[in-house]
Image (cartoon, rainbow, N blue to C red):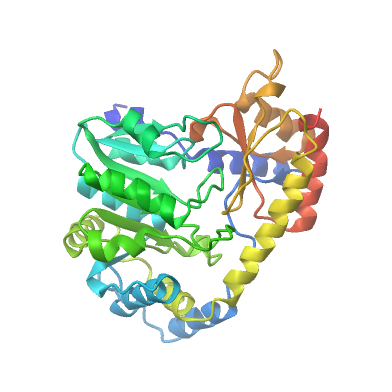
Length: 389
């Protein structure tokens, strides 16, 4: 069968592959703990569930406007006013099937063949594939100083006349790195001064542990709406990954183009998921704060173990729920790389992690601590003989 050439540039999600392998081993009777998926283990807030039940009991589930119900778009603008004190019009919002579709629609609307897209390395594993699918060229930017944030100097080294987009991700996947408001604005303004469009991926915005508080480039939107776009959603901060609700904030003209793309692919997202989004965004945020505090405790638990592993290093995560472990000192003839190490840990320790190669760093493994403390503690105990030696 002759497939499209674009299939040469993309690969299945590594996190989903590891999760599937863990499930396969469990079905064969193996006891496997998975620390691979970035999936919150908290229940959906009760008021959100109640809103969906009420919506379902009406007996109707009609098509909605492609970019989202007006009330849900208004709820998104309310979120930014409530959290970041930024006033945005409804026309600046699109509701999509998760943050992935927001990004996909956006890149399809902006990129032409040969356009370069800059983003920090390590990176969320879908960025390069999405850029390729949209006809662009991914350009990962590695910080000059290992385990640090990118700087203007790093971007200057990567910049070419073909640089069209800069993607920033804070809090970041896979490292848990958070940029302060000042740091984000310095990078964004560097890009915009060079006519580079800025995408701020803020999917984990409520899960930032920095003392300085939450940061968002939405604060620049009133001044730079033509050069800036915000991506967010309910999967991580509101523990609603399976509801597939993402949203984007940008210039109305760009939102209209993205809506055209969405209208010819998925059309509107599920009307019941929009009822859930309305309840989540307009309701109490106490569960969000509780989750953030629990994740901090889990991070500290994991880092206490890792501090005792002399041949493993990693930056202290400032947010999200990931730790990116540099295990290169443990490579050997028998275990020469990150993929071999993942297989070794899954079969010998019974713990599933994700190799760093799909994130742009083959020296590392990603550990997700989005699981209960008892399970996390047991997994770390199982890993210690193999990573602590």
